[in-house]
Image (cartoon, rainbow, N blue to C red; front, top):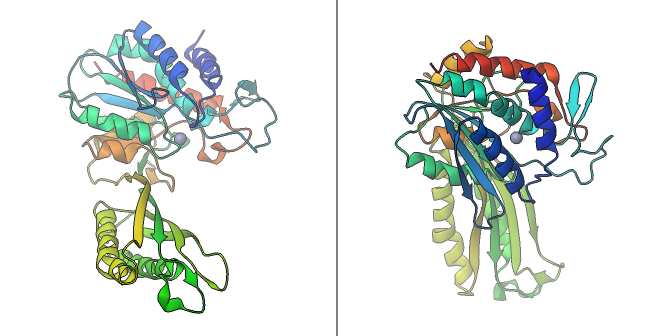
Length: 385
Ligand SMILES: [Zn+2]
């Protein structure tokens, strides 16, 4: 069987593991570990606290720094409430495409990388290849965030990371970060006729939102002069505001869900410290004048760093030469790339298939895309000796 046939075969097996983020990915990880170790890789598994999920980190080639890391997430988004024409966990091939949940996002890339493992094992005499397959990317990059400190502690840190999210094999050098929060306000309930005797949680939440609006303008003013993002500044969105029960009741609870998408390192810390100070020096003292139990609790839902485009990037230069496509771009969606970049690893996003098919019913990957990914990986093998 040729490499494309082998990859399609392996992809069919990977699609059959129903690794929605809410479920365990262990069977898939153990399966991949077996395939990689048969090809000569040194494999390590890292379990999460529930022991139902794991990352897989594997290395082929010499135990030295400067390797190339092929990175992908093993979880997929849910299929519930989606109208599929066929079973999402039974891969079907039709019209030059393979259909199934995770074909493009992103088990296709994982299947191609693992199928090439024996080729890498022959070629990697000078530079190692690493495989980093993670859990819970779709719910906030939890696996990659657990893997990152263990990578940092090694003396053999890779120098390049290729994150195989679907980009139609275009080299992507940047995306914004995504920081999400829920802020819970606890006030003091009371009768609407005597507002001075209560602590109105909704009114304090509204003041917080007003501060977010000012902050959004301050972040706009901080935008770097040259920047490849659209819009080119760090944005803030207030996504939900809840609280209160009736016209004549002072609301005791309120909640704000908001997000920020930073374009540069430092913006998130800038915004967070302003908000911390605003709560501790203005809102909370005012709330607690009447009720010492009043509180504001900021719940961090997810903090995923962006991938910052760099003037000098080994990963970008390598991938432009391997794909033959120098139309380097940015994308609006987030990936694990920024987490690895923060370790000092040069990172890009480049993988088969289109983000337009990701997360949708009848998700598919074209065999032409899969083949282009295999060709890229074949050329990469040629750089390892
Ligand atoms: Zn993905």
